[in-house]
Image (cartoon, rainbow, N blue to C red):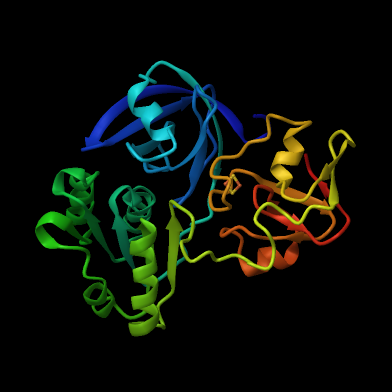
Length: 324
Ligand code: FES
C-alpha cells in the first residue's frame, strides 16, 4: 500500500470493551491527520487483509482509537485482530476518510446496533462539544455485548444527552417507531449497525417521519442491492484500463473486474470488501466514463464520474484512464 494518506502506526494498547469487542489504540510515527466524527481508517493487518474501522476516540487525541467486534462468521479480519496479539506491532493504515460526516442539525437522534456504536460515539462527542441536544439508542444481543456504555452515560450526564440501552434477550429489539415518533422536530437521524436494523430504520422513518434527514453507515453490503442491475458485477469487459502513473494498459475481459485486471500488473492495489460498500478501492478516474455499481457514492458523485470503486464498477467507454 502506498500513497499520501498511508501511515505507519504502532499498536499501543488493546482493551476489552465488551463481550467480543476489543479496542486498539494506534500511535503514528509523527502527528496523525486530523479527523472528524464519522471517519474511518483502512487498517492493513499483518496477514495483508485490509479492514475498515471507524475512529471512535477523541478528535484531539494524538492517538487513534478503533474498536473491533470479533465476528466468528466473518472473513478473518476481526479474528486476526482478536487473537494475534497486536500490541507492540507496527501496522499500516490509510485515511482517515469520512463518508458518514455529521451535518449541522438542531438535535441528533443516533441509532446504533452492536458495534455500530463506534462512529456514533464520536458523533456524540461532537454534539456534546457543540452543545447540540442528542439522544442515542443502542441495541445488542445481550447487555454484556454493548460497548462504551459507561462513556456514553458519562457524556449524557455531562451534557444533558440521553442514552437508551436495550438488549434483545431482555428488552427486545430497538423500538424504532417509538424512537422516531419522539424525535424532536428538525433533528437529524444517524444510524449504524447491521443491514436489517438500518433497512428497518429507513422504512419506518420514510413512513412516519419523512421530513427528518436519515443517514446510515452500513458494515455490510446493502441487502437490497442498491446498484445498477443492468451491468454485471464483474464488469462488462471488452474495454481497457490505462494506469496513468506508468502508462501501462491492461485489458478487462468479460467476467473480470477492473480490480482483478489491474492486479495483474499492480498486485498491491488495495481492496477489502470487493462488493462495493467499503470504499477501500476508490480510484480517481482521469478519462473515460465509469459505470458505478457501489453503494457508497452519492448520485452527484456518480454523475461527476471522477472516481469509482474498481472492485465492482465498469466502464461505458472503450478506455478508462485511472490515477494509479
Ligand atoms: S474493495 Fe470495498 S468498495 Fe471496493
